Length: 82
Image (cartoon, rainbow, N blue to C red; front, side, top):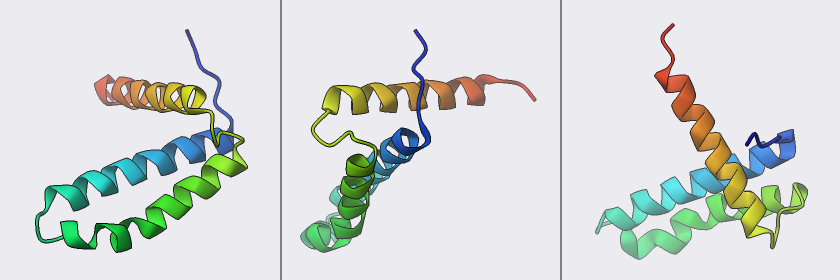
């Protein structure tokens, strides 16, 4: 099944993935963990704004479907020989 992704939806899913990666990085470093709230303020605000702009705020099912589609697409691109 192919998921059609608008530009705004793509931006929202990418912002969500950046937030996820930032969170993992901050929380995996014991020296950074105490500063997590301050360090994640910008990625959280970016993701919130992108989700609102794309109409995805409160629509986790659609967001996670878009994230999965982006990850599948990226994996397929990495698997291609150039």
